[in-house]
Image (cartoon, rainbow, N blue to C red):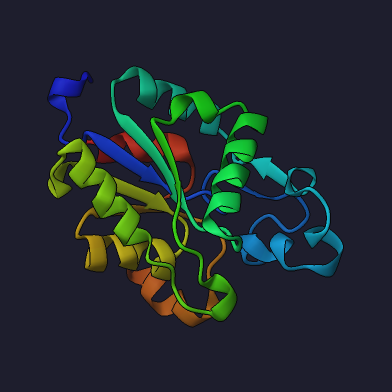
Length: 190
């Protein structure tokens, strides 16, 4: 499949729970627990995270197909620190080079409010003059990724089967567009 045969031009990726997850709990707990846990918060997150299977090869292949790849994720830090952290994590995992852009969205997770990730997505689409119909979001959360993409940004979304937040389980189970592994994303590009 070449870029001319694809409907999608740009793919947005969430980070925690989508590209990497905590080594200790995998999908047993919300992936961002490491930023708040007393024992891990003071440590370097790199010590506690591992890359999801097939991520590096999948991103390399998508990049080679000419797709624009954007990491847009929230971390519980001020924007500048969150952007630095995302760069550190992607560099550590050897995937930084595959992203055209890395954007930390405004983090309000510490207050229990879903982040406005869709603002970052819409801004990137405007800057690159890419229509919403040619965009895809890949995430792990119904609320923070799927609902934000579909309802707020009005773009397609695919969920990675991972941690299922109890409060959103009913809605999460209704989502038809789910994959068990990132390398299954190729079925959603046209």
